[in-house]
Amino acid sequence: MTNDKRKHFLLILILGALTALAPFSIDMYLPGFPAIAKDLHSSIAEVSLSLSSFFIGVSFGQLLYGPLLDRFGRKRPLHIGLVVYLLASLGCVFVTSVDALIALRFLQALGCCACTVAATAMVRDLFPVEENAKVFSMLLLVVGASPMLAPAIGGYVSEFMGWHYIFVILTALAAVILAASYWKLPESYQPDPNYSLMPAPIIRSFLFVIKEPRFTTYAVGGAIVFAGLLSYVAGSPYVFLEIFKVSGTQYSLIFAALAAGLIGSGQVNSALLKKYKSEQIIIVALAVQALTGIVLVTGAGNGWLGLAGTLATIFIFLSCAGFIFPNASALSMAPFAQHAGSASALMGALQMGLGALASVAVSLLSKNDHTAFPMTGVMAGCSLLALCILFAGSRFIRPSTAKKIAQEAGQLSDAAA
Image (cartoon, rainbow, N blue to C red; front, side, top):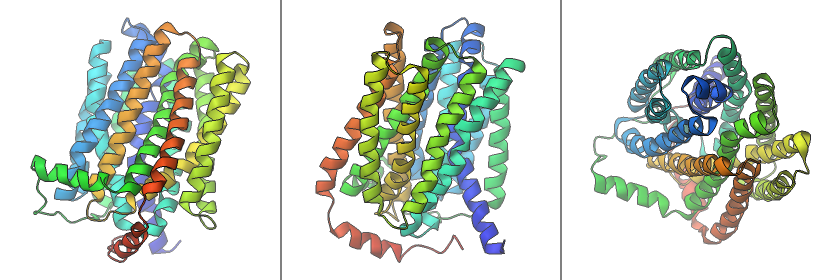
């Protein structure tokens, strides 16, 4: 491996680790829900609210970090966020009530979201715009290790060591990522002292991003698909552990197997991009996912699918998401160079904000409806709504956007070298 290839591999690995910290923070403690609920004298539904508070914290925090990344560069806000995450994770180790867990998970998310925003912005900074979709697909490979490894690790740790040690591991993981980003990650965007942090200029920057139809269409559509994914994450502990009565170990294996579809399709997406455009891939994937969602909610709601059928249908649903996410991210970020931080923050806030609403909806519906319908219904609704938005929004994407992207592509720095 040449020195340039080694540097490129290390860069992708660190960016992937930054992006994976949030899903790892979500997936690792899912198998421990029954133990957490028992230890904190609560219920699984109430513990699920700590997942929702995490989503809300990430959504809110990304709007905060976006302007900071454009003002102070990418690395300083990133490091501050990681320190906040470390402290909150330590707090979760010693928590004694579900309310405290919910609050600390919110603070943990405020720190964690800096990683997601910074990594997305740095992809736009460091790589040519026409390669962004491929880079996001490679990041998905690293991120995909989270749902495969995290539940298995979390299930083992929760069973043999206690769920508190899950947060010990997350603390150590964040420390490693902090060290790697500090020593090995280049600063891809120089601080801009002229970038104002006053509310009015920040709002104008966000409005500039929102007014771009390409961003609005693909960022909102992708965020709704992401909400469908998080509704699966929020609902799966109840559906598999309570309804289908699988063990914690079996649940971890199921979660990992289903995640394989998300990872594999992301890599197939990289190959398809050699022949097809992102716009072509995403519309087909969304249509298939919407159809799969209808089959899922109808079959699960009527008890036709069983465990095997439910797993197969969810596998297809998640596989479609592996095609949608990289292309939606690339298409959303493409029009922006100077406002990449704000665009990344808005995209992430949309994803986690809608994801929080979806997860809360699943948790609340599950209290009164003890079937798979709350999870499957929200999943299907999200995919159908995203498909409608994509069809409606594509009519307003200006032809001049392509010219604008080409002009900005020539202005990219060669920091990736």
